Amino acid sequence: MDLKFTNLGGHMAVAVDGVDFRQPPSEELGATLRQALWDNQVLCIRGQNLETAEYLRAIQIFGEPEIRPEIPHVEGFPAVTTLSSEDRDVHGDGKRLVAGANWHSDDTFMARPSALTALYGIVVPEVGGDTQYANMYAAYEALAEERRAYLDTLRVVHTMKPARGGLVRSRSIAPEILAARPPSTHPLVRTHPETGRKALYVSRNRMDRIVGMEREESHRLIDDLVGHAIQPEFTYRHKWQQGDIVIWDNRCLMHKANGDYPEGARRFMKRIIVAGEVPV
Ligand code: SIN
Image 1 (cartoon, rainbow, N blue to C red):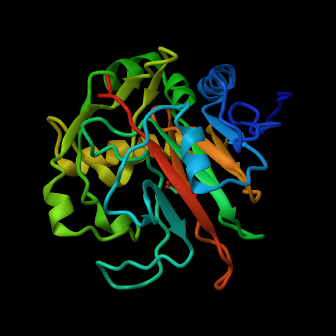
Image 2 (spheres, helix red, strand yellow):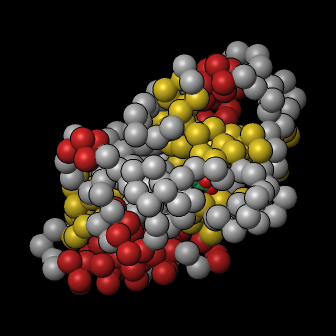
């Protein structure tokens, strides 16, 4: 298989042409793509035209897909959830919903938060609907040594119900789902299990408080880190092409959806979340 890699964001994100996931991926292809992801944090596999089962099979080269019962999924494929411009907040006010419009890392409220997320662009708008990424290795490494040493000592309580509801509209969650997800406590700086590099581990909406600190002070510190991490030198903005599968690493990135496409324009994505480990 002839693969062509193209750097997308300068300091992060790479695209690969020449992959055809209609064929079962070989061990060698899996190893090459995983390495490209560890090296670049965001991997875009171009030009795919897949059945849902082929998509699911392909993503298994990166790990074990996870089931999230509260998110709409493709019929018969509970691990393949959907994100659509037609989504409405069915447990809330019924209005249009742009999932993930706040800077975040996926599912940090879980004891073992998702390692990776794959998003497959089935219908992408001509204008808007980009996904943005912030490189949390680079953001951490740019901090002064003393500040890094302090942040290394902190742990944060994460909750599924948005700790700071006013930040952005998000999907309302059924009470029985919330009851099944107790808060989790994670380090503010985590070490990536594949690369050994340290990264800030931040998901503003889910971060209730830093252990041993008042909420207000916790939120100020977290906001300060978010402001630092989303500076242009640490970020990449992905403009979708139809048929892109973008895979990103939640253990060293924040990301953000943009609902800025015109009213009536369609955006439809199939998403697979890959299980992770306890952050350390
Ligand atoms: C997400 O936050 O997982 C969704 C990103 C997007 O739709 O661009």
